[in-house]
Length: 144
Image 1 (cartoon, one colour):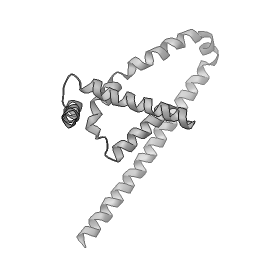
Image 2 (cartoon, one colour):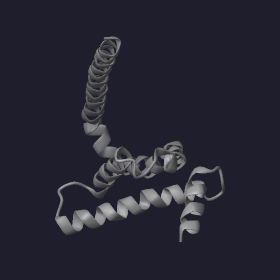
Image 3 (cartoon, helix red, strand yellow):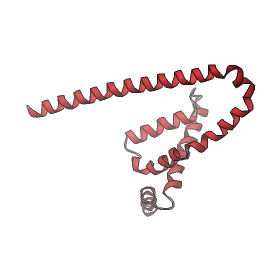
Image 4 (spheres, one colour):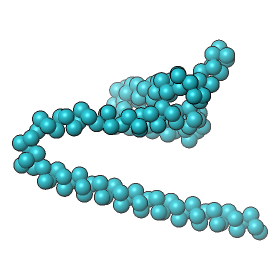
């Protein structure tokens, strides 16, 4: 069993034909586990959010190293446009709605995008300041 596990771990991180499919299986497995948890525990969140939370927890606890899922995640990000094509095609079916209410939809999308960008910028700025101050305190404590 340990040889099988060692070979599987090696295939997860080496540039082989099986690397991306195996890493995608990790993502799919976490999604299925999260779906089961949502169903059994009647959680008010979708399975994909719970799955990402589980993945974050596994990474933070160093149970799953990032290198085990990096290539699969990069592939999913690179192919993300394909996942949006059905949504774009569905918009074509709502021509009359877009003609009458389109400006409202565009305004909401634009405003929400600006709010997300501004909030992200503020959070990044605060975390950067905190990390900088923390590093300076640490250096000051080490110098004493």
